[in-house]
Image 1 (cartoon, rainbow, N blue to C red):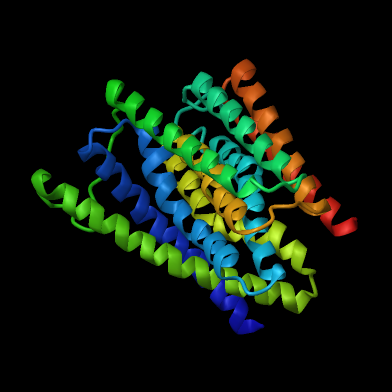
Image 2 (cartoon, rainbow, N blue to C red):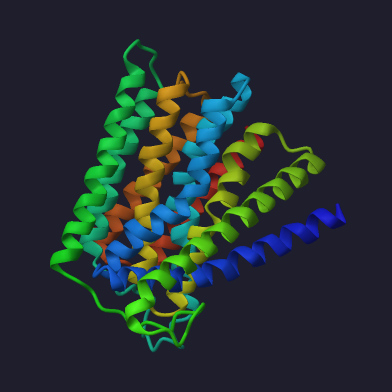
Length: 332
């Protein structure tokens, strides 16, 4: 167990350091591609950091030999959005509060387009509600409906990039970490190389982190559904949470919030499509509760963004819903 704890801590540290390189590289990549800050966070960063957890779902639902293994993939597809809608936003809120003086802010209000955030949350809620509804019924053509989710993400990504092209957003950029003195003309290659290398480290470290988390859960005697819905998603969404923490500390909460919003859209569509294609996609009690808690968190966020702006206090409040879900799983 001592070795497990050491690997657990070291892998978390490796994820954080790799995320420092990732966010730096992805900012330069977006800058060279003439994308705005919102599109960088919602499309480029979100797609990159969502690859490991999407791969987990793909392997589980496509190559799983038993119903239990396939159910782990479905649990990951439901647990990821839950963590992002609760804990990830709560981390942004806490980071805004902790860094408000250093950033010269009088409050922990995020400097972001809260109307656009509210619109994104509403769109996500509609897609996620359909995803939960499909989990309640069995019918013949259900696997074909997975195409709807793939189309929804393609439309979302196209809209984000199109809007970015017409309204680019400038951010102060730190020198590229892997080659701080590189000439501007070569930045696209080196920024891409830095992003790929950082993603490789994130993927490897995340695999180690999840393995150690599973070992800790087994040692503590926690049930499999608790690990699949409550613990593993926290581990697989750790890169997004780390990215948010880094960007808020730099005063770039637009990127942090866009990254979470974009990651949520990926988690609501691509892993869901895979689950609908390759499994019966029928929910038991814990999966249904996870879906309802996620929708409640998204509804709260959408309302708060529209009425109160992107205020950190409401983001922290949404994080409390994750605690409520954990309590239900532990004591049910």
